[in-house]
Length: 117
Image 1 (cartoon, one colour):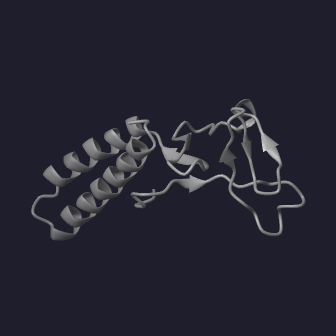
Image 2 (spheres, one colour; image 1 turned 120 degrees about the vertical axis):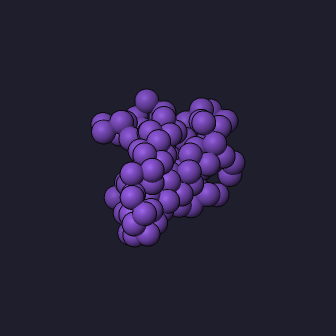
C-alpha cells in the first residue's frame, strides 16, 4: 500500500518510443488519454486490475493512475482496529496494527482526492 496522500500511482505510456523514459498519460478533452509524445489510450483500453484491489482514476492534474479501492481500505482499517483490540498489551502488535490502519487511511484519502471515496 502507498502512503502518498497527494498523488496516485501513475500509469505510464508503454509504447516502444516511450519505453526508454516512460511518461504519464493525461486526460484529453476527447475523453481519451495521451502521453506527451501523442500516443493515445481509450478508457476501455485501460487494463483492469484483476485482483480487484485497485481502481484507475484521474488526479487533479489530469494524470491517469491507480488508487486502492476505498472499500478495501475501509476493510483493512476495520481489521487493523480488531488487531489493535486483540494486541493484548503488546506494544509491537499495537504498533503494527496502527501502522496498518494509517497506511489504509492514507490509501482512502488518496482515493478521496481523486473523487472516488
